[in-house]
Length: 274
Image (cartoon, rainbow, N blue to C red; front, side, top):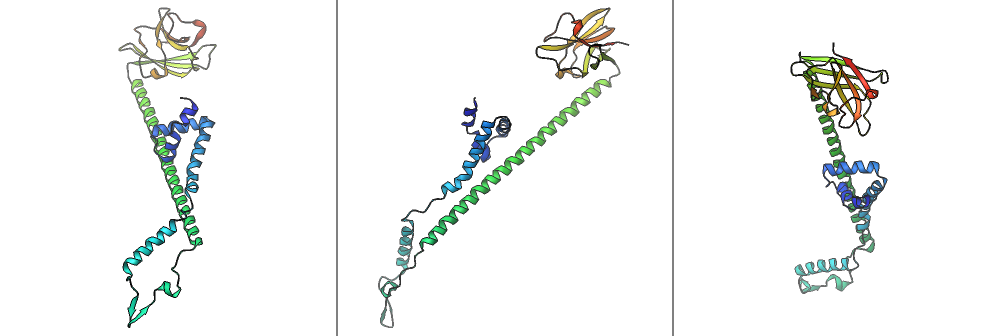
């Protein structure tokens, strides 16, 4: 979907009126922060809604007041005697007969009613916009808090899993220090001597470039044996391999998916098993 199709999808209006889902709102807010065209379209849509009050403020039809007064006169005629009111055997003339005109609202009054109606409509639209805006803001804040809570819980869970793993008495810790070409690099291998499983905790390695991946090696009897491919998802969570014997461990940067033999010039860290 291109930008114009996204703008025309109705998501802007749904967001302004508060009918968009939480996911739709989150995506729109993200898109607006990176796409000036979508942001401009959103502001225009919002302004159009605010201008709705002005657009709806129209002058009453010319014959409207005549219809109203005709209805009033019809109602009065139902309660007014058909003949003149008789009092003391004398006929009392009706108001029209003595030159008193029926009271009718002036043109100024109708203009005032029209302006008042327009103001009330504008206030109503403005209140709705403020309400939906406030609700949307609170929903966004609540979503942010929920995401932060989820992230915190995930971090705590990861820490507890690592602590439980480290607390295992069968686990041997091997520190892998940076080689001469990468002195700041560092990683730690946790080798469970009971089941031979090897876990890796990367503490300082550069981000692997596209198409590349870090590979762990176990050095047994002077020969390198692949101990698995490293990913952030496996860091201290999943065993990379089962190694029954090793005198040292090392990490090299290889093509994605691994290599059958280590590329020595791409070695980053190495550590001996004590």
